Amino acid sequence: MSDLFAAARLEDQAPHPLADRLRPQRLDEVAGEDHLLGPDGALTRLLRAGGALGSLIFWGPPGTGKTTVARLLARETNLAFIQISAIFSGIAELKKVFEEARKRRATGQGTLLFVDEIHRFNRTQQDSFLPVMEDGTITLIGATTENPSFELNAALLSRARVLIFRPLDAEALEKLLARAQALEGKPLPLTPEARAALLRMADGDGRAILALAEEVWRAAAPGQELDTAALAEAVQRRAPIYDKAQEGHYNLISALHKSVRGSDPDAALYYLARMLDAGEAPLFIARRIVRMAIEDIGLADPQALVVANAAKDAYDFLGSPEGELALANAVIYVATAPKSNAAYTAYNSAVRLAKENGSLMPPKTILNAPTKLMKNEGYGEGYSYDHNAPDAFSGQDYWPEQLGRHSLYAPVDRGFEREIKKRLEYWERLRKERRGT
Image 1 (tube, rainbow, N blue to C red):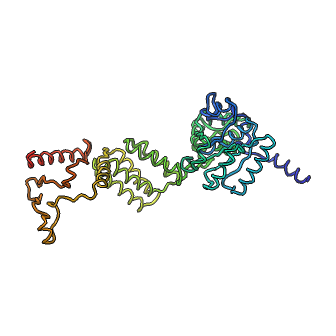
Image 2: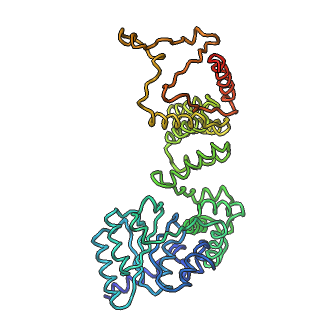
Image 3: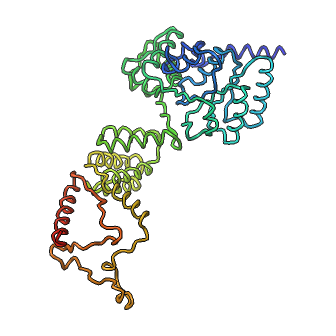
């Protein structure tokens, strides 16, 4: 037993990470999240109202205080704090936790069960929480970095309130650095520019900013002040937070697409660089650029599709990093090209019209008559060969008789579609003249 006590004392004396030593002891010490913990924040109002806290889902990126806030909420509400991780827990452990919570409840003590990475639980495991949430055995706080709408069961979501944790802004990160400097009793040896770079490297993650600060203190020689270049060398740059299979992947490609659609090449290049820097598959990006050229530019600049396809082929040929410049060229081209979704809209309208009227017969006039029977039935009778007509335009009707003419494609007055619009207007005048309407 004495060996166990000695081991415990040695563990207490072991150095702890800065983030652990600075862990808040009260809710008002939590940096950032004022929309939750400020004077009129959602959690502040819940605590002020008294009564049961209710089950909650904390949704937000790493390092924003989800675990810390859950632990402090348990203290504020006099609940036993139990923490598990969905990565390492299964149904057997959940049953054990629930049984212990029931025993605790029988003695008058409630339980706040904090489940980290709750989205990792499968549907059956998530369903196992429902009875103990409903009967008050536990107050559940689940933490997730993924969108709960996609990752959690509707039944679980209906019994819990979702609270969003936001990445820490520069002010909140500075507050953490100030506390770290006070605890260490010395300033961070950084130039103002390097300090600003350090804040950007943290990417809104409070735990990361403290880990980076520790690296800076270790790297700097006595009396040395690191500039931006020395900082980058010292900390070897932190990899950006980005999961190619999850929400970050879809958020950034959406931002890239909308920047292109909004004709902002600078923002588009920024999101392209972020995705490539985070390890996104370049050919996935190339496919999306091709889609942008088709959907948002179309025939306003037919060359956009050529450029986008060429960039895909160039990357496929050159690889990284040389091929990345081809993607950048394509992004700049599509972002600065004239925009039109006329072809996209026309096609969607055509699809709807075809589904509603898919059984109508085209005019017999424009159908071939490969057999005598079909010729006797009038197939091809009266067809006008357009190349033999003046201006190579006969003006005949190609629509099913029961459906009549529809106008689906409306080119915009931008880019090459301006020329297409002129042609269509010219042909419409000829059509009316030759039909005598």
